[in-house]
Image (cartoon, rainbow, N blue to C red):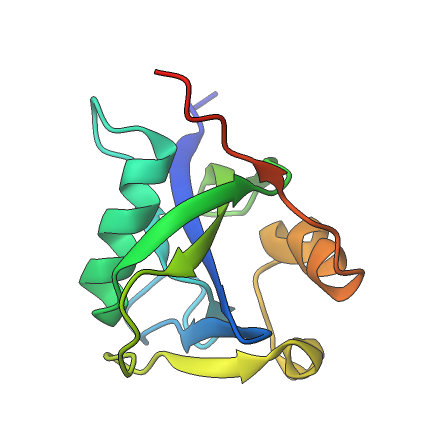
Length: 136
């Protein structure tokens, strides 16, 4: 069995709105909504990966502030370990590359990949993420 792909996902909240995009036609799960994120590079922490991916994908610089539930999900094309990192905006800016700010209540109208289901339940219930310990 293949090893899970480790993914960091930046769950960026600002004024009770979340940074959301739609996956490109060439991507797996094309047309689904997504939070910014991607593969964790060797030597990178999940928080570092979330910050890097968010900046690359949206042009928004964020600060990791908490952790939501980690999920392992098996899709037909891959098995993924999804690490959801709560982030706040470091410098306010308009998102790029098709990402938009979406109200919490509008997330229900989006079509996210199944691996996001637990996170979406937590967001709907307004469950706070676990704070990130700053211990080295």
